Image (cartoon, rainbow, N blue to C red; front, side, top):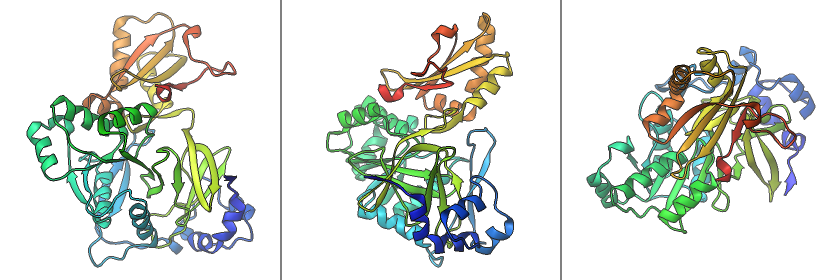
Length: 397
């Protein structure tokens, strides 16, 4: 493996990048200085290349890290609508690598509500991969007869976030039923070692595990292969990728026919970007220190702190993430403050648990939070002695 060189890749994709932005560049340095990462391009740049899609749209939502709803638009294409090059490449990649194959019967475990854009997109992808889809819905409502039905229709693949996949398997076993699942496909959060061990122990050592690396803004930009669920091969034929120490991974669309265009978009992930046999890989992925995944939802330390400080002003707040023996996700919120009485702690816990992403974890009975008052000595510190705002212990479980 060799380190990825942004300048070399830029020259290979310069024509497409000039088409995307409507501006000519002589080199990568000029491109990176002309468009600041995360900035909004002048509207005339976007309008010059943005595909005018006036057809019907699925209007979903995502709340990101701020708790403010953000609209996500997915084109509802008919038989006469053309498929963009990147959409075509996505299906070819999935079918070539066996992620989704003709004849697969796939359980779609994504939410069916206001945040259903991913549920719909999953159905569209599976349709184009010639796979059949079962919209599973609320797992907690499934009974023995439902699992018998899923077995009768030949369910063999589960597609969802890792914790939801585990919830399905746990519920199936709790009801004394068995379905021969031979493949799981996850997205939304990393597949932790504890998750992998559990699934292979319950579903068999031959279980195939694939990961999809995606964004609400544009869909999937990479996939992991069978050997390592958390090492992603990026789709560099459809996106130009950059990596900086300040912003981490950046993505720019190369497909000017796509209904969603990214330009130097900061994904928010840091890790190792390397080339091997002409393929681009991203691994050892980690979020910015103040952001973390909880039950497949991205949450910020700032959002949690704001909910706490609405009840009581706490100068130092640490969030520790861990897994219980039952593989439930536990968020322990450590507060360094004068002694707080039981009522104040209960109000803080209730206010934090009402954050939509955390409330979803409670509804699925897959995670919980705990608020405790500690001294500075009881906080988690880095190897250099720095206090950590977020400490993720789930990876070591």
